[in-house]
Length: 93
Image 1 (cartoon, rainbow, N blue to C red):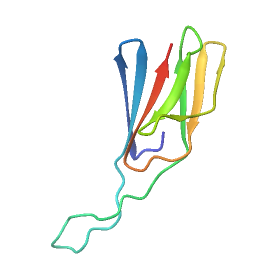
Image 2 (tube, rainbow, N blue to C red; image 1 turned 30 degrees about the vertical axis):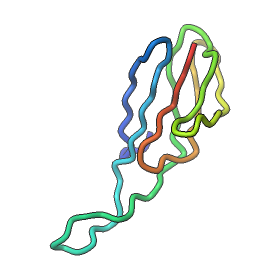
Image 3 (spheres, one colour; image 1 turned 120 degrees about the horizontal axis):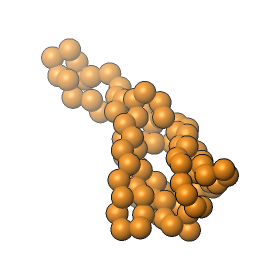
């Protein structure tokens, strides 16, 4: 993942949840006001995770969006085209 994307792997039931958090930001509104109105999207984000077996389902949340993925030689591979602020890749198996 790009340096400004924080990646966290969690397990919930039989699913792995890969949290992708975009920590990048645009310019502050002014030198005295550090609030940021713009978080530019980043991507693609490449995931390469060792798994014993291929997953039964893979989707991106929010939205339950299916993503193309590959599994070979015990490696699960996936490209997330873009991370806006916080996305979660759900890998079930």
